[in-house]
Image (cartoon, rainbow, N blue to C red; front, side):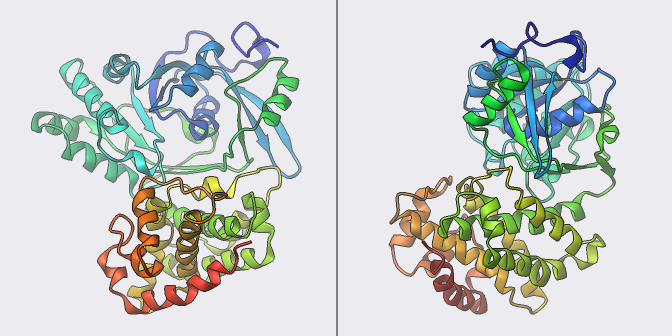
Amino acid sequence: MKRLSSETLTGAQRSFGPDVPVQIVHLGIGAFHRAHQAVYTQQAGAGEWGICGVTQRSATVAEQLRPQDGLYSVLTRGADEQRLDVVDVVRDVVDGSAEPERLTARLADPEVKVVTLTITEKGYRLGPGGALDRLIAGLAARQAGSGAPLSVLSCDNLNGNGEVLRDLVLAHSPGDLADWVLRNVSFPSSMVDRIVPATTDADREQAAAQLGAHDAALVVAEPFRQWVIQDDFAAGRPAWENAGAEIVADVAPYERRKLRVLNGAHSLLAYLGALAGHQTIAQAASDEVLAQAAWRLIEQDVAPTLAEDGLEVLGYGKVVLDRFRNPALPHRTTQVAMDGSLKLGPRLLGTIRDARASGRLPESALLGVAAWMAYVEATTTDGDLPLDDPHADVLSSAVKSGDVVDSLLAVDQVFGPDLREDTAVRSALTDLLPLARSFRR
């Protein structure tokens, strides 16, 4: 069967013509971007905002998209609906590791108005060849060239992601570049939401039957999607609101709600679900005991910490749990369990800290942390559970060195002294760890 490409795609399937200029550079063109920001950009219309997608350390996506002329499809799966749409807004793909000069040239191009990023939490660390180093190199080239203004939009699950990114760029830029960035580059924050499970061979076979062509870059997603964007752009942007994005003055309340409700419950279900032998989040969320634990987290622990934000929480939480139960999305528990040392902070520890400041002991949020501890412990004794984490060696050594709670609380990369020295937190985790272990099947 032929590959999906400009030759095999009919005109009726195209949204844009062949001459759409590249005005967006996206760092981290993985499955999530292809199912989220790229879809919003295509549906925003106007045909003026082509995307140059940049791979990070792996060239796999570049190898998938280049033979397909940047084309790929999105298979949207709900409990009662399925549809397949071709996305043709990606007009160039750069292998960030193998083609750093071409990436720098794209970032320096005055035609480029927006840079977006989905590099995951662990991408916000400086290091040779990392996304932030490449971004700073591109900004330096832009300053030395046209000096045209630019907006850099983080789309990762970090509190205040725009501020975090701005501060990192400024802290690691020479003085003259930092001054130029302050005057010419904006860093709006955003909150993104869509469940995008790993694509399977069965998914690719289904898409091929519908397309009449093989799509190596297919992505699968749920029907629900959300994008909340701070209105702070230095050089224009697509009309993303035409595709349903919310343009707001302050993203923080939406960010906190999503991180603590959706991502917090996601992590709780992932760790307990993996321990219980559930392969997918849908299975875990359909387990009544686990579903009740997730609801208690939302209702009893998270909602009180978000009261001052003025957003609806419990109804949002019910929608979240319904989304998790979607049997058409086989989102693996071990996939969601990845990078726990980086995810615990924004997903669960923020809720715990706010609750402790109000004199409460949030047992369901602490159960989520205990579940993570039990999961880390289980990975050292059971080859069936992977520990895919940037601090895996530190975590494995910690659980082997003595008391699991004390050893993991001592890991500075995860916990601060405030939680480590909180005797009520320590005591609760000690009590909850056996409960979390009891889920092991």
